[in-house]
Length: 292
Image (cartoon, rainbow, N blue to C red):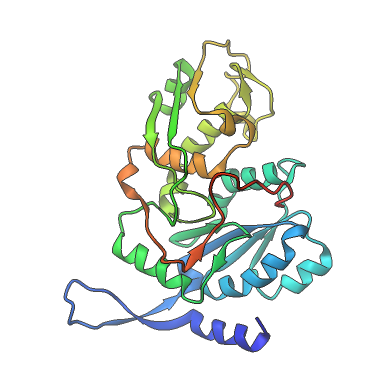
């Protein structure tokens, strides 16, 4: 995309758009300032530069664009600088893929300020009208806290229980055959995830930082965990399909799990984008190891 096309996209970023109303014949118009409506988060490393170079111009006009990377070179960042609003260099883990997951779990919701956040992977493919799917989805489903274009192949089956869990979260957690919204492209309600940020971090830490009831990774919030570091193995138990949460963090599974655990499953929707947004996903699709 050349600079002329990018300028045309920017010109459309604040534009007059019709609103769908209950009365079909009524036509009101509202000015949409996308930079105040959406925060857009994307991670990528040096090996994803060509994908980012093609994707960021499509994203930039439609929200505050947050880029997270520790391996993009200074020259590459300079080339992308005209498109992103904020740059983060997370240092959660030297493994790029783990670093990407942990940034999305621990930092993304804290950095969001707009009513909605959009999180996508660097290998997503967007048509010119991709934002129309987002706008239509949030307008037609104002109650939704998480919207996605695809459902995960596997269901969420997960249990977290024990006295420590009940002390921290108020009750045990049990999710059976829960739907998962994949993280390749999703839209979240910022207020919901910020309100429940501590809830999400506690589940994450009990899965990711403990093994067999004992801590094996340091806490990002040690002040929260004084009593747990000396806890015995009966303080809490995990059951079900929790291994990816324990090994990788698995940001999209955790995000969907939190929605289920909070009793908001009916507010998590998968809606067909009609190919306006495409992400590689499914059996046999591997994980690049150097995302950030």
